[in-house]
Length: 137
Image 1 (tube, rainbow, N blue to C red):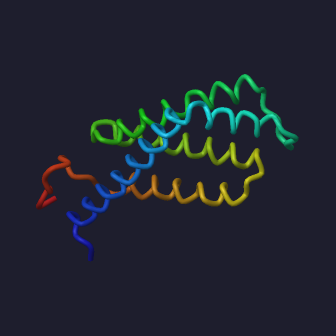
Image 2 (cartoon, rainbow, N blue to C red; image 1 turned 90 degrees about the vertical axis):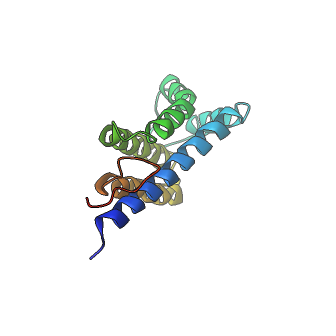
């Protein structure tokens, strides 16, 4: 049987991983000098089976880095953990949907790993502090 302390430690590792993914992704988009936005904006204007209005696509592409930074910072706190994980799921499913529209099937499959990472972090119990282990429950 795995102890509750080890499950809490595992949740901490999962959450640190998610924080690093989000903060790295968000900051790299901010420092890409518009490369992220230009690349994906152009892809969504191509000949696709599903065509979304360019204004919606471009607006979402502009706010993605802010979403990533906000979710990454919010994961640091335990206060709204449940809601932040819901935000993670909605965000990851939106990215999965975007890759589906672009018919990038390997990216769709890879996005499932992020969904499962969120599920793992959601179901694991967490320590009350980042800096000490909760022993005895």
